[in-house]
Length: 118
Length: 441
Image 1: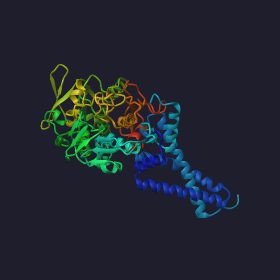
Image 2: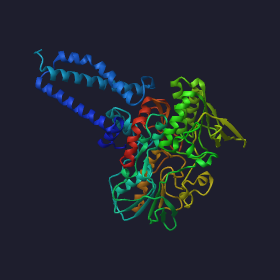
Image 3: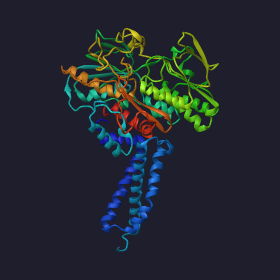
Image 4: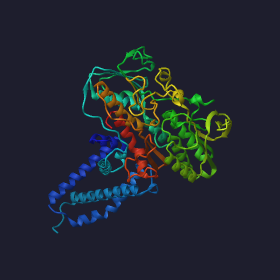
């Protein structure tokens, strides 16, 4: 992949997750992101109360993301063999944490509507 | 990639981060160039495996007006790097199987028969379908022949019985090998692993299957009930000295009984005994409860009969095509190229090598048609994600000089057992292989 194209990356991810799961995840990520942007625009401010709860879900998101990657690659934490592996795991955990925070914040905002003025 | 500038490494690292995984770490070859040429050249490609399909796709986009014909009777395309995963119980046999027709470009002719004759003087290929194909340029990508009968008493139909496995033979045989390995690692006994004395495809595969068997036994708690013997055909385990030393250390660590200069010459399935040639000219019998038979390998009969092979030495005996190791152009017939396993070059019988060879043949051929020259050469790049257990591998890349040529110097250490290298083998490789087939990687 000297000059990887979007199509090459899509092909790789389809292979990794299976076509149905990959596109399902893409749709889910797009929907959640759009909903997050929607509530931010609607509320015109960040609700720090909702953000606090969202932060509490970050460790869960981090662990879930790492577990998911280990599961689909038939590997385990004990397979971490060097610094690059650790960096990769931390990166996956960070993505999971941020994703979980956005998800929880968005769900709260969509279900409960704008919070009281803070 | 010693000749890649630093920005290439940075770009790959950015790609790695963007992909959120190890995908872009895959060894890469120069991408297809955009410039096309006009030509009515008749190009015949023998073989629609990895190399043949990839070169067909690349040439069909680079040359307008050429008559490209590909010759191969096989309806199934096999993703051979997946055989190890199948034989390790990690993938079903179907994982490696697709349809040849799905990968071939439009606008070329597919002769669904075997090449039965090559006449480089008359520039003609004949086929089992009765076609006589006159060519201006010939690309031989016929792969190699697994010569099971080269081991006395051995044949394909023995695979999957009496403790006999053979990862190379095909996806179904790899799955049958897994059943035998699974049973063996339940029960224990003697596990016997070998490699042939001939050139072979993916010389790391015999090593990694030994590691995988050991790993399953340890996971099942049966390792202390078995002996693992590895018979190396020569005085080393791997042709690249620095890699050989690392593998030797790992074999010692895992408690393998490594025996050097042992070549399997016969097998008795009923008695479960294999016979090996020893350096003093004698023989040694080793009893086994499970073995991964790797047959001698050679060029297909049509190649050996076609006058294109090396004329002396082991390359001649095994029939590999006499090409310049850098340009992959035949040394006696300048309109003939060889690419993939059949090329008689010192290294390079892996899919990753084909991935690097194909763009070289493409550029060399196109330059020749256009009446020019190119400095695009193949430097022997070969890659082997050497699995050392389920979950870890070493991403070993090297060239003709036996130099390590890591794609990520300083980031992915080639001689370390890493999870990221496992990810590359387990999930990233097939997608890149598929992109290669289509000429996109």
